Length: 274
Image 1 (cartoon, rainbow, N blue to C red):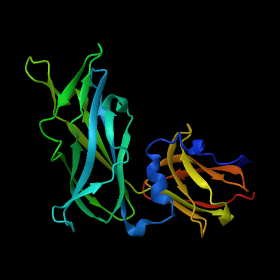
Image 2 (image 1 turned 180 degrees about the vertical axis):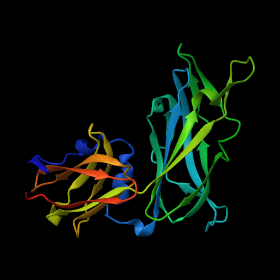
Image 3 (image 1 turned 120 degrees about the horizontal axis):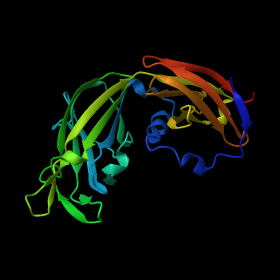
Image 4 (image 1 turned 90 degrees about the vertical axis):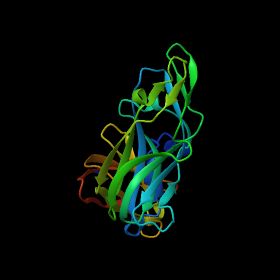
């Protein structure tokens, strides 16, 4: 069942609160493309908490290694969505941060390389802060085994679970500490998604995929020519689609839809005139 109500206009602040992972949805679906049969790879960071006030690490790069690469080294750098300092303790208890997202040709990737900078630090609960020395990782990067075959039209979520407590190693009795990252990798292949069409085409609404608790999962825009949309990488579950059109339509509409993990759910045609 559709619900329709008036909306003055789409302000920038309406989109600003979206979770960082939503950047993926908008960039991946902005042109309603099927990415020419490419696979989608998302690399996120989470943390197993430690007994500290803060564990700050400087992330400067993420790379993947292909089995059959066109570049000599086989390593390919991905664009970091949020480079710089990250407090790992902000990512505990199930929270995670999307580091990189890319459309890649189908094929085998063997490793991920996480590259850290030199500005890493540890803050104790009494307020003391000490530098974290990283003997290895800044230059060559920390190599993590993946060995994952990427298939066309499938979204792969790779979670880097950074164990803050195990990664901090005292240097004898000097009061100094080394950062020796202990990271577990978790990979999930998600074939689910949502497609549909919006009329009138000229409305070109923004689309949000929301949970029952109104948490944002992904977002997209309709194709400017056809009104079609396709949002990939949606896990199985029941969601609310929210369509927000700009002037002169000035409206917001919602529709419920159920997604399974192995198919693209069809939302049908959504008529913003009704």
